Length: 251
Image (cartoon, rainbow, N blue to C red; front, side, top):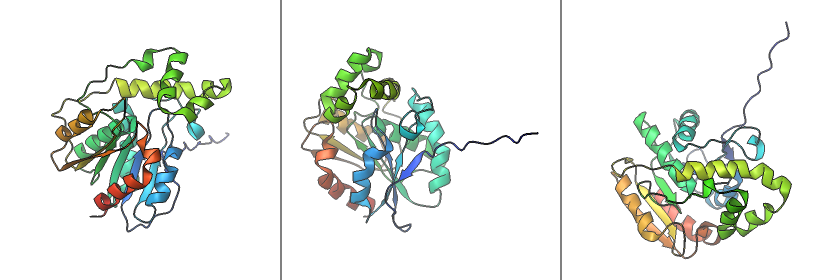
């Protein structure tokens, strides 16, 4: 009888720089259409202070063959046991940008319900979970989806001009927009850890008052930091963001 070969699924978490095991870890959740590699620069900048573990969603890069998920809570349910196994004996914080902020919140909420959780949540570039999203980008045709990307991320939009790349990327992008735009929580759904909201002052998607609304979703302390820039202020203001994050991670 021929033995069955078990194929190991690609890991959910990526390390780009080795950090000290005595420092906290930082789980980073990408934006819609993004991948773990979007956090390489942040990982390098934080390496002396924290070890970044970037989440790799299904349906992109080395997980291209896996179907992307369209439900935020289902995505969180798959991540929770992975995080528990990886970080059960180590303090860690969560950082999410745009869609990633909502996923980081849902993951934190589910982890806390099971008796564990991060020490801190950074919510970057996204409205609070209780602020309804009325956009319908996930229902648009491919051209409409690409046009939305062009509003914020010229480099990614340029890659989408190539047919082969577009066919590979659009399913995951549409799935991410679906998960993000259909996710909502009432303000009484809170986490117990402190929350730090980060937002660009010229972000057309997340206005400062909508970022301020994250305050309703924690029973602990809340801070908001506003940076010059648009939706992807993190790319241009990385040093300033790191200057805010490090004291919060290592008081």
